[in-house]
Image (cartoon, rainbow, N blue to C red; front, top):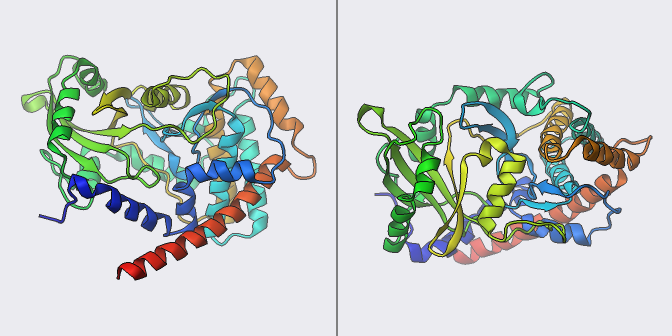
Length: 404
């Protein structure tokens, strides 16, 4: 058997893994430093942000948190795929977070600074396009103007089956999770709590929500394990549960992701009315921002902790962009910003969309399309993240040397 981590050794192992991941690249450091992002944003020398409508925002809107998402009915669209940080807040925060992520991706691709300026212009063009009158939700559905990187991942998503998911996530195993690098054993109380939770009618409905499954099909837990997954979320309760739905030849396997929900780092609007329970907040935000994902999620309690549950589908993929050309950088910026814009716009009526669009355009200069509040925020944050990343790498190297 591969080396596995017992429950009492999880936290130090996960802390070391998070530090290692964040040291791999400046862009990886951005993904793992959500809480510090808002601290730095508050302290940065930025222009006053535009006063936008109070809507559900992603709160952690970087490139890796967008990608193909499947609906319970079989449709696929590019949507926001991680809502841990979702709150009712300023939509400008999502734009700045996405702008920072894109700027760091450009630096990782050795693109000149002028390309970053053009990327932010394209970001605003794409975002504003989502608020045009009677605009269909085209960006999220892979219609004309889709960048090559997005077309490729959408094509891959459309071809995937349960076998692909099993090969990727659980090494093709059908009846148990392979303990080792990714999956660790549960404590007895954790396993008992999982069995109790998955025996409820609410989880039964979640497991049978897909159109290919009968509502009254039996649901059985085959195996469960602690899941070492993610970066910024490492250290939270995270479980993988392998489930069988149906019986005899009609049985279907599915992989459930159970994740602890904690207080969001993203600032919420002071007078916003949101669920007090963190898992309920995440699920409610998902329904607003990513309907395909929201319909496949459930808030629950496990061992006294707030958790949300979703079934992982083969079509759910992360948008990985390792290298960008100058033209790709601009098209990806515009496309992803439109996806985010559509997530915000669907929460507003026509009058509210018009008002927000007017506010965005009022703050855009004629000589340079990227408004000063976005440009200054991203520039300050790039500098701050670069310095913090190098300091993190130095500490990581010193710790590694001491351990050796």
